[in-house]
Every structure is written in C-alpha cells, then in structure tokens.
Length: 257
Image 1: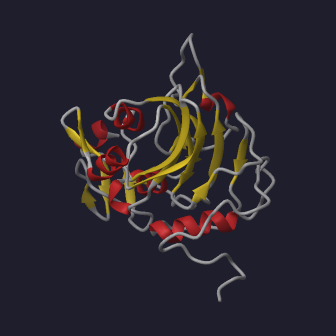
Image 2: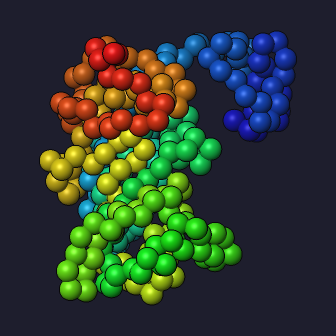
C-alpha cells in the first residue's frame, strides 16, 4: 500500500494520497482509476479468555509453548487482536477484539482503563512498603506504582494481595513486589477496566461478551458500535454480563434508571 501511495496510484476525494493520510468510510478512494466499494461496517466483537500458565500471547510459532491464538475461533475477513499481553507465567483475564480502534483505546494509558491482579507472594509487606508501592518506585529508569494495593488473606509464608495498575508494563507487578523484598509466586489478572473474570470460566476456556456488554464498552471508549444481525457464529456467547459498575460506563439496556 505504501508503495502504491508513493507511486501516486491512490487518490482520495480527487487528490493524490500522501503517506500517513487518514481516511474514514466516507471518503471516495480511487486506485489506478478504479473506485473502491465502501466497506460494510463490521460489528465489534470481544472474546474473554481465562489464560492458563504456560501459554504465550503471541501468534508466532514456538516449540516450547502453546499460543493462546491457537484456541481462538476462526474470524472470516478479519483477525483477533489481543488487548495487551500476559507473560507465560501469568494467568487470568485476557481480552481479544476484532476492532483495531477498540483495542487501541482499551490499552492506551490516556483512556484511564485500569487492571487488577490477584498476587500471591512469599512474605508479607510492611505498611511502609505498601505506601512506597503506592507512591512510586524507580524500576529500570521509570517510576512504577500501584494505584491501589490491598491485603486479601494468607497464612504462613504465603500471602495474597489485590493490586491495581493503570498500565501493564512487562513484569511490572513482579518487579514492584521484588523492590520490597518479596517474591511473587502466583499472578492472575482478575479485571480489565469494567470487565471481570467470571468465577465460572475455567482455566483455558473462552467466552464471548454479549452484544450489550460490547455496546457499553464501545460507548465508554467512544468507539462506533454496530449491532450484529446474527449470533450464529457466537459459539462462546456469554449469557450474563461480565461488567461491573465503572466510571463513565452506561447502564445495561433496559436498566436506565
């Protein structure tokens, strides 16, 4: 496409296109004198996976680990995009979408979508250490912090915390706890913004968010929503909502009061 644009073969609304030029579905696009037909809007879809430890979030083949993409249903005319990543030793909530703009807005720090993790560690944090993790710790030249951290339960040397991050940099949770002298022995993402991991979804299983949940997420992030006319392909369709009350999130359809 870039070579065609550089060669002057692409015309947008009567003017030769330039590299980096943005277009939407309303512009008239001509290639080699032939007008492109308008593309039909594709209904956004969202899959939720309870990722297993030992799987990677990459479509690239590997001899050592299975890819989560191998478990996804076929998507004719499109592709699944993972919303962020979880490393091979992290389990829990992982989202996939078929819409690039929706994926971008879910991941970009400017939209303020947070992530919550359940963390098991060896040892127990002192109150001063908890405050330091909230205030910020220098890690690899950058300040990392939890926007919230709460003790959950534990006994002996094993203790559970729930922590919230505004971004998900590589190994950030593990490195933040390591800065206080405690080692993470289990890490599981349990929430991504308003989406929570259902307790009924077993490790390795998939479910597809119902249409009204997808609409509410799209409204929250100001992404266009087109309702699907058919649910025939939605093998994993969720029966219940997986959304919790969240700043800016609209009420479920039929519950507007």
